[in-house]
Image 1 (cartoon, one colour):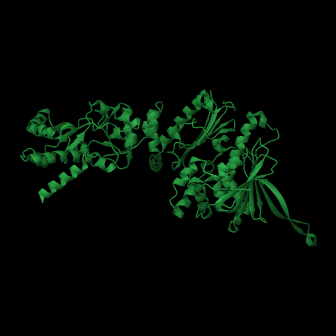
Image 2 (image 1 turned 90 degrees about the vertical axis):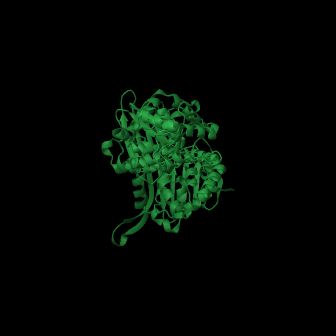
Image 3 (image 1 turned 180 degrees about the vertical axis):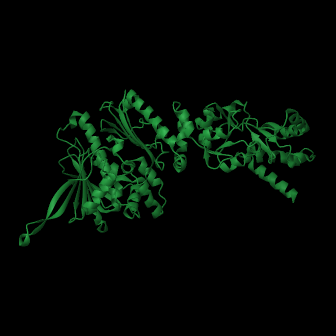
Amino acid sequence: MAKHQFQTEIGQLLKLMTHSLYSNKEIFVRELVSNASDAIDKFNYLSLTDDKYKDENWSGKVFIKLDKEDNSLTLGDNGIGMNEADLMENLGTIAKSGTKAFMENLTGDAKKDSNLIGQFGVGFYSVFMVAEHVDVISKKAGEEQAYMFSTDGTGEYEVKPVTKEEHGTIIYIKLKEDEKEFLEKHRIETVIKKYSNHIAYPIMLHFSEEETEGEGDDKVTKMVNKSEQANAATALWTLPKSELKKEDYIEFYKTLAHGDDEPLTYLHNRVEGANEFTTLFYIPKRAPMDMYRPDYEAGVKLYVKRVFITDDSKELLPPYLRFVRGIIDSEDLPLNVSRELLQENRILANIKQSSTKKILQQIKKLSGDDAVTFTKQYNKMIKEGIYTDYVNKELLLEIVRYKSSTEEGLVGFEDYISRANSEKKEIYYLIGEDEKVLRNSPLLEAYIRAGIEVLIMDDKDEDSIVTPMIEKYKEWELKDITAIEAPDTKTEEEKEEIENEFKDLTEKIKEVLGKEVKDVKISTRLTSSPSCVLKDPSDPLAAMAGIFAQMGQEMPETPLILELNPEHEMIKKLNSLSDEGLFADIAWILLDGAKLAEGFEPKDKSAFASRIASLATKAL
């Protein structure tokens, strides 16, 4: 018998399960039944599409056997089964990105980590919340040899060849002494009806029950072995909506998503016409843990006429909707549709387009706390969609939300234009990395003075790519306030007079700063700050900022325009300063301070610090 060490991460996971503070331990039944159903789905598909596996007498089933004398619960299926390599990969190592993400989220705090179990489920490993020993006996369809995987969940496992007649998997669970409640028929029935009532295959419950025969002195009590079907065994999505309650949808979701959370919303549709298909989609309240991983797990299962086809195709919905969980069941696709054909199939393309639109329309309907929750969890995904899905761009633009310079919370484009100047039809925005820096930006001063709202976009990595390509929302143009003239209350004559008054100053500062600035100008956009920096909208490199961001490259540094506030005491005094050394120090501080205010770094930090120290010394 070969002994193996669990992968380090699995060892950590088993330790968490074994010592879990999580109270809802019944979910191990849900997880194992769900795995059994998936295994049957996979064999069912093979039996219908591959002559090698055809068996007219086969029908999928799950069984659970309760044995009070042995203090054990056994759960089995006649699905596709596993061979030695499958057992070691699926049970001995982390094979799924979702489990990897779960491990990455562990904090070391027992209570917090136990709560993660409820959010995530963790599949097979949840059995160790109740088990002191587990044997997994499995035979893969089409193979002769069966294998047994044995472990007590401490640090190692054993795999050895065994004999098993039928393909499928049997999980023998020796329960901990304090987990005997899971040997009670009523307890297991309740759990199955709660989570697995609409698993598409019958779940047979095998148990022993006392029965009394005879009367009087001839009365005899004996244990009788019984079997009953514990679930309805009808695929929930095939039932009419009128027959289903909200609770039915919620419990089915918990099985589908392997968690305890209720969904944020769901939509169940049957489409008839050129293509016939049924969809049931859920939006989780929490983003899947692997949502930002390149190897994320697909969340939608594909069926054809109730026959499971795949649960790992990323072609069923666009990538930006990878957080959606659910079912697509087509009446028109061929059963033997291949992974390659899925990418090119016209029927599936129609289903994908229709489903995407319906999901986005459902999201758009969210209001109140649900809308806030959605934005918090998935706003990045919607921005990704704006960039990649031209067909649904307008709908996505109605869903995306941003922070605002004038409003509490998050606002949409429709909210913005309801408050804005309808004659100008312009939506103003400011992009950066830090919300606090953006809100304190000198560039906002003129807009605050004029009572004009500016969208605060503090997700620079995404916003700098996505926002420039939006260009318009309906008839409203999006304007980056770092590249346009600010709202102004002064006449052209007044501006010309001020520029002439400070002409010598701007030219002198430009001479001091040299190539570090594109130009030095007098500004009418500032109210309290002495200076600010701006991009030159005519600079071709500045115009290509979005392209560099898309390629994941740093944009070559381009000189900025330095604008000065003629009303600021510092600028007025500088205009009459005769000390050349002090003048140069202040000129550099005006540039570097303005850069810092916009989230940029001074080119020479030590020189900047030295100038500040020098000026502070003179002021004391």
